[in-house]
Image (cartoon, rainbow, N blue to C red):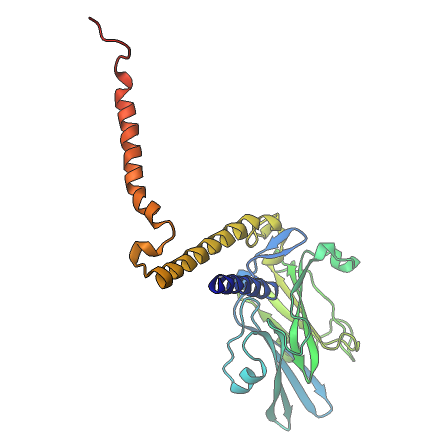
Length: 319
């Protein structure tokens, strides 16, 4: 009885853990929003973009290391220590002063488990369903994630996967930079603007937006990812609810299978410890299982006999 309860508890813990892990992870191959399924699997892998700005005589560079499909594999030991396993967006800060560049720490932004950071559960939204008029004119998906922190302040990231049908037709964004007109390049540091964008290797481009001056949004990283995979007509399914993840029947048969497995294991343990059974005798209903080949043989012979006798003449024989 104790083993049965233990097996049931273990099975429940396994299913609960699986559900919890699924609920806090983002499936880049099956991202569903508004009934549309997007496949961002080809956008997986390592990417980086940088945000460079000047503070008096110091130039500060924050490089955002990104992998939307799996945790980052960082080489630098300090980065690995700050952005522990499970981090999918890590901000790495360096400062340059008097031609000397020094590391200034790293911090996790998107981490698929939560410690002291913001809630890590990913949230998706179809851009066409957005309440904002400007967003509703876009085509694609918005992903909001968190789980990281910096100096005990929760960090979040909002990634907009925006439809890009051709190289010249990406829905452009206009960002306001302090001290410059909208969209103007920095004539003294054109490379700073170039660093904010990166080719994703799949026909698209990632762009980091400078952090907002708004206190409520200053710890929110915003990325615009212009990609053909953000177009709804290139999505893998028009109905995201019909093909994503396990359905009710899949879970039903899985639980039935695990229940049968637990029953067989428990019965075998009982037969072994109480009756000293070995081999086939360990299994429940072992006598019936032994008789199955003979029952099937008799059944097969009866069918063959019935078929062969079907052409004989019934009734009495002629005198």
